[in-house]
Image (cartoon, rainbow, N blue to C red; front, side, top):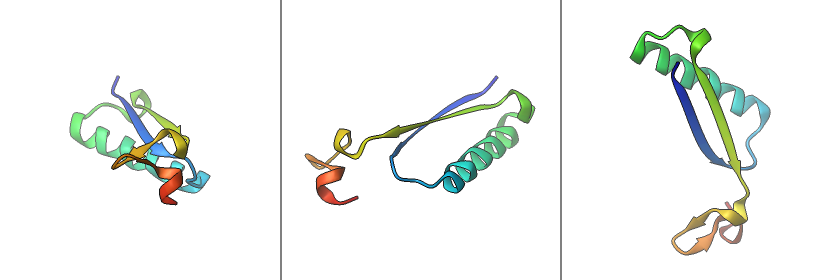
Length: 63
């Protein structure tokens, strides 16, 4: 059973997260021939203050 973990900054819409799940599932299905029913996708939403970019939190960068 393929299992994908996706780390993203918080703030995506439910529609965007749905699209990520659908597209990652499709890509894994095509790459591994695993049945879609066996593929799992887990989105980790990270608080912006917990994500650093070039030594600064994403929250402070306004991302």
